[in-house]
Image (tube, rainbow, N blue to C red; front, top):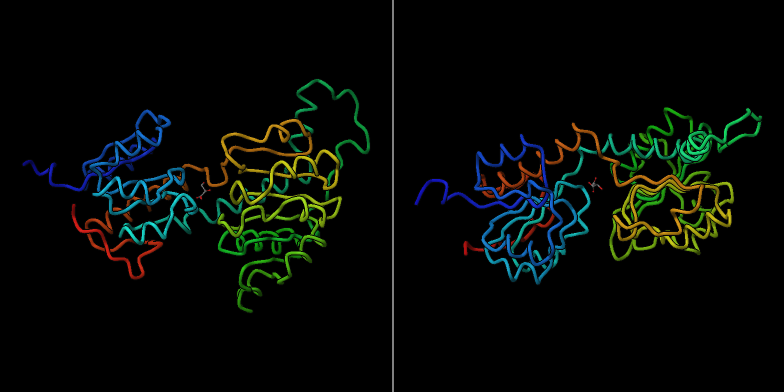
Length: 335
Ligand code: DGY
């Protein structure tokens, strides 16, 4: 048997930076989806059959069925911070580790949250479309007037690392009054550090000028914002979703936007993406971007490298860097 044959086998499910693939190949036998094809579930299962690890992209459903059919698999390393593609209970039962990529994308994603807030409140894309369509013939004093950002009240739902980074930008950069809602309240030091005060979700929705969603997706957070929550918001408010599709009921949001029950929305994530609810495509007061909040080369590279660190850490050195379900995990024996 050659040296190469005895190394752990890794599947990279999508195209990735060449230097990331190169680093993986220094340690593992690697099969990469260099063509960036959309593999069917069957194709993914087939390719994972003989693999010990996978570098995943937050898109592949890792559940009991897949784990039962991939007996060699010991680790799935997401290059994303979100991990709602993992059934962590099933992974724990199967003895398979899941890892994600936190921290390295925090500031970049917070920047983008702010970009989307600014573009939405100040109607950047709507007015650009107007200009490109040749409709700008004269300046008018009320043309595309938007919502004030500086000095307004920002409500953040989900106050993890990214929520906190957004709060600091808002409070210190834009003099905003920051309120937040989170499963658990931050300690007083962290609240002071972010200059943020805790509110119930209802109070936040009723009083915020802008609402930013940064909450992780789970069964519990599904449709955190649906028709009832939209009805609580100010008619002048904007809603920004950089969290996950499914946190917002996109159909209810499109109706609220069309009927001007809220002023505008900025969405980077969608229910069932890359499909976008058709009603969102026909309302003018929404800014739509294709899940790019962490998309700078440096950040995406750092996310992928952290996934590689996790694969090397777990399969070679015995310890992953950012494990999700390591506590009490009885690792799968070599098959
Ligand atoms: C994440 O890391 O979860 C992002 O949504 C992907 O860019």
